[in-house]
Length: 257
Image (cartoon, rainbow, N blue to C red; front, side, top):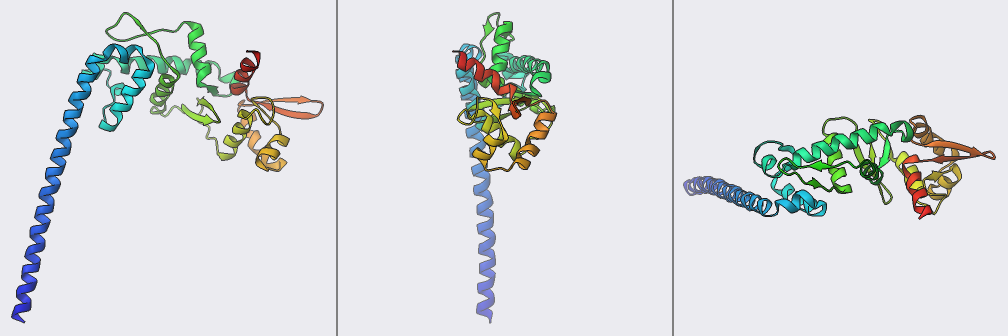
């Protein structure tokens, strides 16, 4: 019995030693990881200083730089002041861009029900001659569709209903808080596929062919979209066609080229 007690005591003591050692290793690993992250942040700052002009004026390079920042938890967009804000000014740039994007979306809402292609927003801003300058630069910055998508993410943090959705090959900005369920998205995907009808158009027949839906389900999905102005109804010789203005304009432009 004595031998057993001694064995149990040694076992408990050994477990305690192992637990302490595990905690020590965890602490060392955490400290090492933090040191590595700090070194990477320093390297990232040096990279940003070296390539400041490219980050400010090359949209593709800027997108790659933001991808580099994300794993380190560095968000230059949220820092309008401080190191990143004063050095790059891209937080201010995205703020200005998000305001302009919101203006375009709100101005076009009566026409498209609050859904508009990212490419159309860029076209409108380009036609207006909209320019953006960084905090410490007199030269103007070019911007891309990726920049517009990033600016919408800033708007979405305000809980304003702004978000982007993927419909087929198109990326659309939604500027209304209305939630679109799976059926609504399916309808938009059918409209985006010009193999069914003209681009940007759906009918209950095309949805039956593409999705296997009956007329009741198709009409139920279209009801909200129609009520919110996201689709237009055209009745020709008794046939109802539903047009998505957010897609139709692109389809018309494509067919004219």
